[in-house]
Length: 374
Image 1: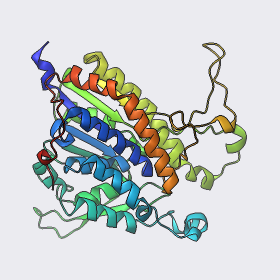
Image 2 (image 1 turned 180 degrees about the horizontal axis):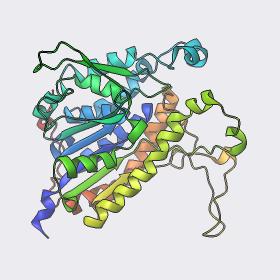
Image 3 (image 1 turned 180 degrees about the vertical axis):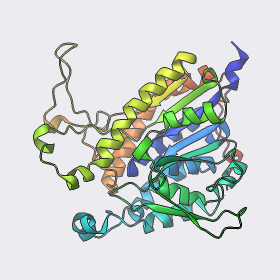
């Protein structure tokens, strides 16, 4: 077997999805058990959007997946915390369903005051987080090892970067960075307002691939990618339901319809591009939160919508709430149980992917003290 396979540039990609990030954290725990070492020592690039940015940041700092699971289980209600009146009535006038005070508190306490630049000094893995700049109308690639020494975001706090990436429209208010150029005599302060990276890339796979090839100059044939989702939302929206939607109704469905719609294109394209140059070099770990459709009558027929009572998660045989902000104990328990069973089902696929792309990977039990932490 060629020794070149052990020199692959390994990318880990983590989707957005709010509280459903607990699904990703469960799967990450399974991946780390297979790899046999902390994930920030195994992967070369870790990319995340929205809730995926929080997970990516934690992994880059050496936090154990178990710790990340605990954040969703124990602190989810701090993040998505609002009075009933605001969540259901006043959001139409105040602009967001939740304030970001709880999210800021959790991020600062869990990630500390480390800067994005310092992450590049702590972790073997490079970190890439995406957020959308509404002023300059572009997606910002927050990179921990930015090739531009004086880039405005290099010394921003990591928690700020994650906050901007997780500021999902309708759920949280936007976040604005403020910066003064230390190398300029001008006293003007630059401002960069940002919202959730899911606006442009809820699955940051294509962005990570672009960064690796264009910025890091990695050949596609030398790239492997593990892409992890938060569970796919599949609730059908029929014509009779949406035909009379106005601005407010469509706005309420932005995270589900528009952000979710990008994922299929990003994952399909990445799979085709990478596997054309490196067969077997791409693995997507994602499952349907609920089975909504039956089998086709023939290969060309549409799939029938199942009766509502039959629309369940196949791993736990019960329906899962697909909302990004359901922090109830029962919902998180359902998400955990389904993700654990999925991860177990995919265990052999994960192992094969790791060994095929890195025959020298250490498959020994994880040694916790070997983790890089902050």
